[in-house]
Amino acid sequence: MEYTNTPNNLGTENVGKLLMRYGIPAIIAMTAASLYNITDSIFIGQGVGHLALSGLAITFPFMNLGAAFGALVGVGASTLLSIRMGQKDYETANNILGNVLVLNLIMGIAFSVVALIFLNPVLLFFGASEQTLPYAQEYMLVILSGNVISHMYFGLNALIRSAGKPREAMMITIYSVIINSILTPVFIFIFHLGIMGAAFATILSQVIVLCRQLHLFNDKDCFIRWKKGIYRLRKNIVTGSFSIGMAPFLMNAAGCLIVILINRQLLKEGGDLAVGAYGIVNRIGFLFVMIVIGLNQGMQPIVGYNFGARQYDRVIMALKKSIFFATVIMLAGFIIVELFPRMVASIFTGQDDLIGIAAPGLRWVFAFFPLIGFQMVVSAYFQSIGKAGRSIILSMTRQVVFLIPILLILPNYLGITGVWVSMTISDFASVILAFILLAMELKKNKQDYNI
Image 1: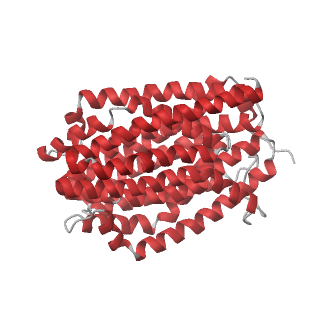
Image 2 (image 1 turned 90 degrees about the vertical axis):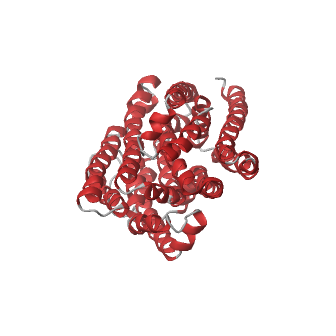
């Protein structure tokens, strides 16, 4: 069957131009999403209070776990879509759309039901105190109630990007951020809904843009669209999506575990203020990490398509350019934070004690950021070519094998500083491992494909 509007330029156009075309919209979208998270925290910190900011930090593991299940479907399916397009298998590509819709509905509802049943004990396990539990509970009740919307939104946006519409994916994210940024202060400062108002704003903004996403796949000229016969779950699509999406799933799931450990260690060493300080450090670090994730999202369809088309020289070119741009991005974050840590922390709160804990935390956590961009791109590269195993190794070693033992030991000797230093050491170790695995892969490629 012939389809129109298939992105065949992925296999012919200049790789640098393609990376700009796909990467810049994704970076803008991820930056906008990160800025939303930051402004959300600012509104909560300034409008509700520092305990609410600490309560928000307690919810990070839940958010990571929800993102893990979303990535299992969305990232895996979008990568599979790119590979199938490179192979000119448009029938399977269309079936991927229907399967993503059904899988997100099932997983989104199931996650919400289970999480809501055990909400309070889970939040306490995550590190909530008597003071911060009410804030975390109010926020997550709303977020979990609309979780299926979030799953659908993120999953469909990943497919839109891989289907050759990076600008549309970018605009959908930006619309969501703009709507959210307008609604959050209205709900907090005018309607006095507190932290629950921020959660309402998040879900409502996603509902609005989800309608736009559903409409995009009604275009009869698009090579994937809503039609009969694509909603039956197919074993090859489900298993293929899950095997590729397992790497980001485990990365986010591990992130959930790590945030729990960090929160509990900080609560033990410095109380609720230390947990709130991590909320600030996490949001700032998340900004630059999300920019690189946007770059990786731009790289993914290029690498996936050309790998499927067996054009390995273009695959390596996209990898090299992505590593360069990721390094520049993370270097910028490093410079800003190392020079102005207190100024950065003061954006979220005016409380000197909280700033005093967050500022050194920022400096330690950002110490090896110029190298982390390389590690992130390499992990995404393995995922994009369907070698999920190596991507999983990189994700799990950084967040579990390297970090957890150090995180359990150092704070006993260095207190709060030990928590920050643990993250720095694990980052450095993960960069070395990424370099080794990439060198092995490139050597194998040169032997097998003469590149």
